[in-house]
Every structure is written in structure tokens, then in C-alpha cells.
Length: 275
Image (cartoon, rainbow, N blue to C red; front, side, top):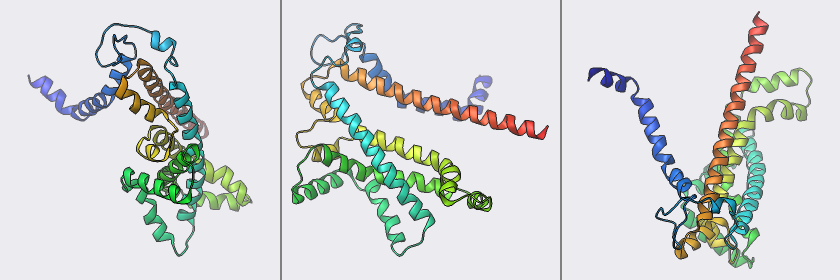
């Protein structure tokens, strides 16, 4: 009995981490499992029999792929707008001094700290008072607004951790300001920008509360899932959810592999220089 207890004490952190990871991925495993189900009725809540019909025809349900395409378009445009505006704002807050800098830093955290229902109702009231017609553009503006804070926070943290001597060295080597930004500053800040962009895409694609208040008659994928759950969830929803999960995992693994290759290449170049 002592040997297993000693092993558990030595690997307690690893065991706890794996247990937490398994707990977090359990819903995804259930979604994956039920994407191969062939239910007898409208509700895909109990396992009946194995089938791949939903995978061979993921758009077999009316308006499903249309709402998915709309959510993807909104997420892409919201990610682009929030990333561009958030990156410029983050550089302005990290590199420049101005009067309202402290107030702006405080206001940036409001969309992240504020409940989504409050922001959703506020944006809906603003659009109604302005006479704006609800639809694609109101959803896009709302998504850019609440994604902006996450991009600014991620990019600003990366910019503040940069070594200013690298840019000074580039200027000492007669690099112009655009060259310094493109060849030194931007590559160093790229991980923060990429993190903010990926987070914006996930938040925009997944959002329901703010979208529901500002969509009007437009139906995005989360709204379609919510509406179909009341009438019977089709198996194709599990297929799309599984596909999105696998794509996300693939992107993470690809980033890890690329990062590992860069690290090994740097280590090889440094060892060659020493030898």
C-alpha cells in the first residue's frame, strides 16, 4: 500500500490536472458520441443506435448551415474589426501619455466586468433611439464592442512585456520607424495579437445574449440551437459542434508543433554558433 501512496503523492498535481482536464472535456465527448446517434424521435437525448447519416449530410436540417455561415461571417468581421482597433488602442495606452489615459484604462475593463444582459439591453436601447434597423450590422457592431476589451487586454500585456532596447537597437542600425515596427515590434507583439483575435472569434461565434437583443429577425447559429432545443435538437447540431471542437484542438496542436520547431531551430542555431 505504501508504494501506490508514494506514487500518488509524487504525482498528485499531474493526477489532479488530468482529472480536471477530463472533467472539462466530458461534455465535448458526449457531443461527439451523440453526433453518431440515430434517435427515434425529435430529441437527441438518449442513445438509440449508431449511425453516420448526420455526418454525411450535416446541412440536412433547414436553415442550419445558413445560420452557421452567418455566425462565421459575423465572427470573422468582428475579429478583424476588434483586432485592428484593439491593437491600435493597446499600443496607444502602452506607449503614449495623455490626459484621459487612466480613465480609458479603467473603462476598458467595463465590458468584461459588466453582465452581458446589461450591455445587451443598453445596445438595444441605443439602436432603437437611433432608429437603426436590427440585423447583421447591429450584431456586428455589438460583437466588436464587447470583443474590443479582450483584444486590448491581451495586446497591451504583450506590449508592456517587450524589451524597449530591441527597438532602440533597430533605430541605431538606421531602421526607419515603419521598418522598426514591421520587423521588430510587430513580430514580438504577434502572439498577443493572435491570442486576442482567437479569443474574439470564439466569443463572437458563441455569443447568444447580446446577439438575441440586437438581432431582430436575424438568426445566428447559437440562436438556432436555442430555438431548436425547444422543438427537438437535430443530430446535425452535434456534428457541427464536434467539428468546431476538432478544428480548435487542431489549431492548438498546430501552434504547439510550430512553436516546438522554432524552439528547436533556435537551439540548433545557437549551438552551431557556439561550436
